[in-house]
Figure 1 (spheres, helix red, strand yellow):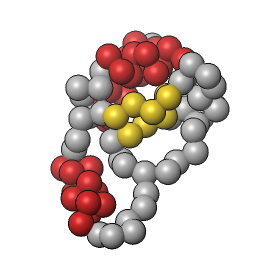
Figure 2 (figure 1 turned 135 degrees about the vertical axis):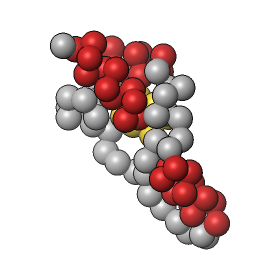
Figure 3 (figure 1 turned 180 degrees about the vertical axis):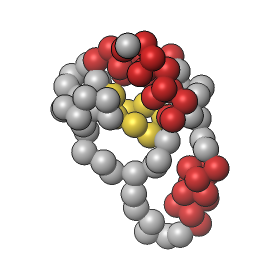
Figure 4 (figure 1 turned 180 degrees about the horizontal axis):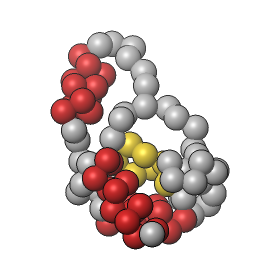
Amino acid sequence: MMPPECAITGEDIGEDGGLVYFAHTESSRAWQARAESEPGFVGHPPNAVWLSGAYHDRGQELSHLTWPEARRVLAQEQA
């Protein structure tokens, strides 16, 4: 697993953050299939992203999108 650092700010996610699972991409589906088929496979799912504070809340609202799509929305909202 990746350390609990916000994918937007790079800071610790704090008490109000958490892991958000976004919609799968082709590569995350392939990762998932490999994880399920290989005994002992470990790693961080590519569609699971640590987000802090308001980013976590908004990320949950956007979880129907892929992470790249959600990241673009979050970036547009910051501007």
